[in-house]
Image 1 (cartoon, one colour):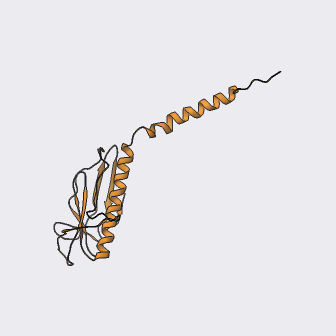
Image 2 (cartoon, rainbow, N blue to C red):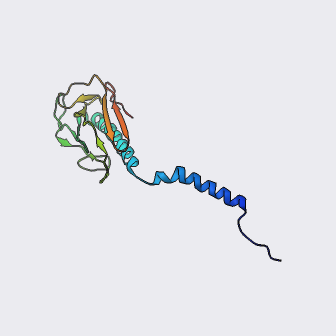
Image 3 (spheres, one colour):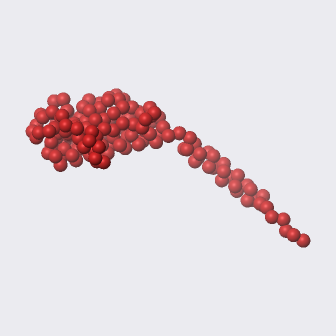
Length: 162
């Protein structure tokens, strides 16, 4: 006599339960990238602001951040001193000559509302880029996509956090 090979009823039920759990929990996360675009853009903005602050300290110059609804542009003051306007393009961490941060192409991620210009002075403190006056309250940057992420730049220290 030969024995028949196959799955037992218990094995089939266990496989159906595992597939059901995957269908409910894991598979919807693979459906879209919108949440990853929002999270990724927020992380890049946070890292860019921290980089700008560190560059201001390292260069002993003002580093400015200009915002549009879909882009951040980083510049720095070519000469030292307070109240000096930013005019030179800041080199990015990967060597890009004009450091900018934008969402992925085709993404619907925006900054809303668009924040006023922000700058960091030679000590790394956040200042208003238009006036050069030290900020007395935190700056909030809201990133809107399929969800909303909020970044905060603290006044005296310039610490950037989500």
